Image (tube, rainbow, N blue to C red):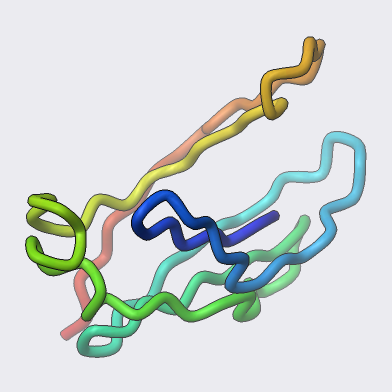
Amino acid sequence: MLAVHRRAGVATVLGERPLPAGDAPVTLAVQAHGQDYVLLAGVGDEVPTPVATADGRTLDSVSAGGFLGVWLGLVATSDGAPSTGVVTVERFEYEPSA
């Protein structure tokens, strides 16, 4: 798992965590704390742990070149190389904190 912040065409790795090959399910989560977004990952029955924190203050429309808002989602890539890998998203949940 790789957490990347891209700004003005420059990619900065915020954090990474190796994930085992195989069929073990991976849980990815985001916790928002004010303007900070903590990105978490867990494998199998493991409780997700923090991998990186993204600073939401850099996502304003001026800094982001007109972009407005925060979009959260998953991306799987083989970085342009041929691949036989498969990613299956079984569930997506949004749970606002109280």
